[in-house]
Image (cartoon, rainbow, N blue to C red; front, side, top):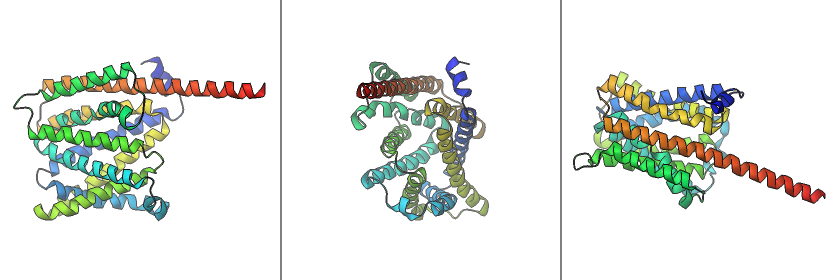
Amino acid sequence: MSARLRQALSQPNVGLGIAVMLVGIFLFAMNDVLGKWLVATYSVGQVLLIRSLAALLVLAPFLWRMGPTPILRVERPRLQAARVVFSTAEVFLFYTAVIYLPLADVMTYWLAAPIYVAALSPLLLGERVGWRRWSAIFVGFCGVVIALEPSAESLSAPALISIAGSLCFTFMMITGRSLRATPDVTLVFWQTIGALAAGLVLAPFTWITPSPSAFALLCLLGIVSMAAHVCVNRSLKLADASTVVPFQYTLLVWAVIFGWLVFGDAPRPAMLAGAAVIVGAGLFILFRGGQVARRDAEAAAELARRTQSARRT
């Protein structure tokens, strides 16, 4: 165990934050497995519709407690609408991709999103990225290419759908970072409304009346997803992001395990190699970003101290 991790674990609530993050990621993995199993029978639109209705039922107590004002009077409405579009497209493309590809392959493309965020943040967020993180971004892109194994056969529609979905996830993350002042419940509510609207439009064209047990599983999909979001958000409140976010990469481990056990999908060597490169690059970007943020915060604090000292003299 590294000295930095030992120091982090010694702080109050950090161990609990890591545990809650691991539970949340496991729930996301269960949600993905259940979704892949359901879209083999029911259309993506139908899954989105019933999943979103169940999620709204889970959200209802939180919405009641908040009242209508934080929900309806959102900051930067155009950016909020863009985030809803990206989140709806992301979940639609994810469920479409897992119909045709192993779960681990799809998750590998999705886990490259933090690398895309780092690459786009100077342009879209005005953030400074040094040469070390640019090098990690390049390595991360190489990992995507390794996992994709570009050829006439591998550049299939499902693979391109996965890449498009991961890009939508990237822009959802970027818009979310620009909406930090918006309560989590508000973000999740409008995100769920977007998926519900897509389901209402698409589901009638391919509706298959589910059995009671299948309907319960479709509802469970939304409930598990909401519980996962709550765990991840709570984890980020209990501990620093730089400590708990790296544990999100355990999602890939669960995807490999469940994909193999439930669907019989043996992981491709190229996918595993590309995933290792992507995870390594993503972790470096995360830790380097934390170092830069701490350094900037210390510099700002020192400047404020000197300014205050100069005023006194």
